[in-house]
Image (cartoon, rainbow, N blue to C red; front, side):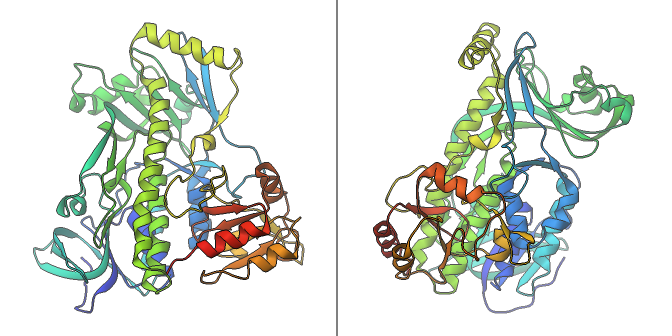
Length: 515
């Protein structure tokens, strides 16, 4: 157990040092925010849970300066092919084509234990972050000024920590959520599944599909995912009358894997039965306490967005906390965290459920009708759909008043060409912060309009200038697609609003007040 000296209140206390908690601690530590983070487990869990990430998360790793350390544990996500009742292809999901909009491979698979260790090490590397492992939260109270957290250590000792704010990143059975009385709302999905991770040998790999697969078979819906290296994952539905504990034994697991592998083809890494849920916290903030990650939401795994959603929570909340703690914004800014994330989670979960309903239809007649409709909708020719198309924009929260398809979406990250001809990602030149980015066509009136604002450190950039010369045309194409001349970009890279005239710039910037 790590030792925590008696001291004044922390700025932020984080309960849970899994991926969401570790990223929150790392982001706050990077900004010098005095942060306490604890976990009841002394070590990183040595089995994989999450298996997929997207380019938004890789961009966060880049911001934290750990992208190169994590890269060896990532591989591009293969296409996913959906097979219908009679074995025909009914749907296919792929990735967007290069040049990539965020300058990272849009979808990747990864090995969670080593990545999680890197995230923890990064958080611990900051002098402003205190880590306590082997600590279990037993009580949480708050008053108008501070929250008080009570812990019991592995050796039975008790301790208290005070903090201005608390983030509960302590998983689906969150103690933080329970102690402050936040309920969960059911979004209408509850099914038993077996999740199996296998390290497959060369003989076994030769038997397996060359793409990831969704088997939309009413007899037993299943998912096959090509992980990094020799890692392969199966998610197999548990039929009515089957005992979840029995199917999760090695004998039961190999029986369900029989259509693909025998015991001679690999080694079981993990097998566990779960109920796939669709749940969201009714509140994301209660006084000085916030919930994030699995403590705030759970969704079926059909698009591999579970960990991604937790990272989005951490990024969304941490830039707000920094602004409030540094007196750059009023505390009311924190209220928009829950507004944004809850609405986004509900919308994405609804879309994931839609994918799940394709996969999990148990009625053969309805499944055949599903297959026929999907094929009719595409004229009998299945065209791959980019996974990124499923990702919704923000629809509520800190957004400009003028609706636009680009508002609430993620601003691109192009490769820039520097004066010496070298290429570098935009965020490495212009780190996270408020920005207004103009198309190459704007005149001086746009630039002058951007000089009048209420934002701390607003950076103004014009495409095509020496400060913003891109290598692949990503931004140019983005401006042309959306028929706009400027984008106001938040510190988390989400677009607050877009502008078509200089007057739009003035109006939106004048309306944007954080204090």
